Amino acid sequence: MKELPILKYIHPEGYRFLAIFGGVSVLLAVFGFGLTAKLFLLLTLFTAYFFRDPERYPPLLENAVASPADGKILVVDQLEDTEVYGPGPCIKISIFMSIFDVHVNRIPISGRIVEVRYHPGKFFSANLDKASRENERNEIVMETAWKSRVAFVQIAGLVARRIVCHLEPEDKVVKGERFGLIRFGSRLDVYLPVETIVNVHPGQYVKAGETVLGYLHYD
Image 1 (cartoon, one colour):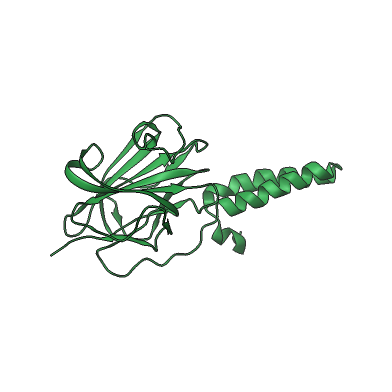
Image 2 (cartoon, rainbow, N blue to C red; image 1 turned 90 degrees about the vertical axis):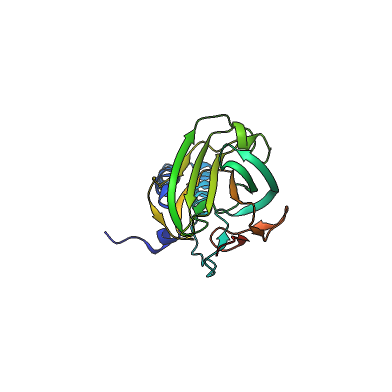
């Protein structure tokens, strides 16, 4: 059966929710529960909005790091010896995704996946600093063609209860391609080499696959 055109712009993770909420709204309307049917119709429309998956066009410069998530920049900081990135200094950029942002996550730069590490944890509000350390999260470490190390972490939030990631070690990935999502409000941390020229600041709104977080140094 041919896919409905509208589904092209909705992430597959949202299909079953649309089917459930849409089906319930139809049944309620048929049996005369008009007001409740309208509430479920609104829920169906919000689900379509939440799981929207617009096309994005990544920056062409090879060393430009694209944002892996839509949202607001919370933190731009330099750290030492992080567990995620490894020994030595790095730059950390944190992005907070509200329930109104696109939640499809994208690869920040082309390269090879080195590690994928899942950690069960708590569900503090994703805009808190401790969310990076204590919340349920999925850490992805990758290496670029010129051997730069980049890491990014999907972090569940207060109401987020499912992290989706389709990456495996040794996968070859391309900047801007989709790799997963986090449901219903969350956070994504990015760790870059300390030599990176940062292109964003706290409070700035960024778009996954398009906004340049920074430029990696390479010879």
